[in-house]
Image (tube, rainbow, N blue to C red):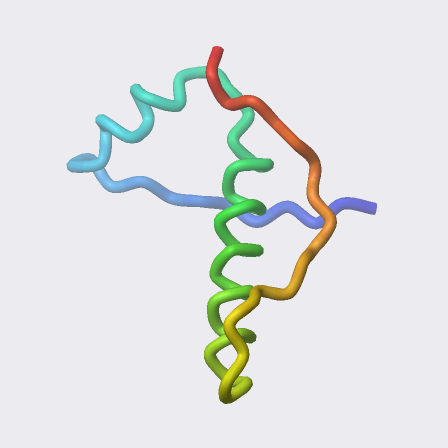
Length: 63
């Protein structure tokens, strides 16, 4: 079962919506969240220089 979280855009962010168009950007958002998680996890462990590898799909966002 999927969980759907809405993303709201303000009127001044119309350029973001125009850029996305009709593309599904859920994979892009998930990738950003994973990168953020990796940065936070690696910063919590002193002396750790590598990020934790999380399995992800290779998606080409160029349409």
